[in-house]
Amino acid sequence: MYIEVVKIDGKGRITIPSYARLILDISEGSNVIMNVDEDRKVIEIRMLRDKVIECLGIITRDDMVRLISGVDLISVKCVCEDIQNCSLYRCNILLKNPDNVEQTMLSSTKSVNCTEI
Image (cartoon, rainbow, N blue to C red; front, side, top):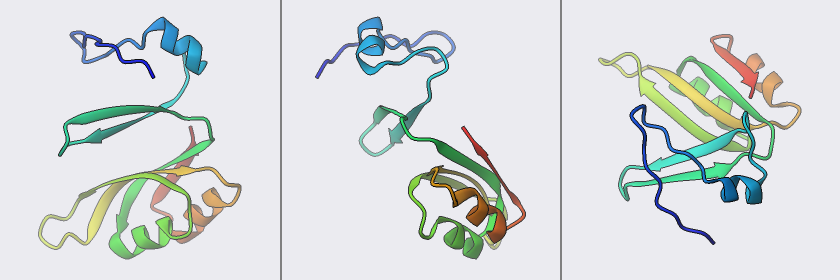
C-alpha cells in the first residue's frame, strides 16, 4: 500500500502520481470510480476493470426499484425532481455490464437512457 499527499489544482483536479498509474496500469482515458463518503469525509478512487453501463433519466420510485433489482449495481444517485410529492426522481445509475442489463433497463422504462462507458 502506498500513501501520498497530493494537491488539488485551481479546477479541483488531482494528479495520480506516475508510479501509481504504472502499478495500476492507468493511462489517459482510463475510467475510475470515485466514491465520496460525506459522513467520514473520505474520497476513494477505485479502478474500473469491468464494462459499465450508465443510465440517466427521470423515473418513478417503482421504476427505480424495478430497474435496480437483480442487477450488479455500482452506484445510484437520485434527486427528487418533484419536491411536493417526491414521486419523480432524476437518477444516475451505474451498473456492471452483463449482456442483458441494457435490455432489462430499456424494457423497464422508456424515460431512461443507458450507454456503455
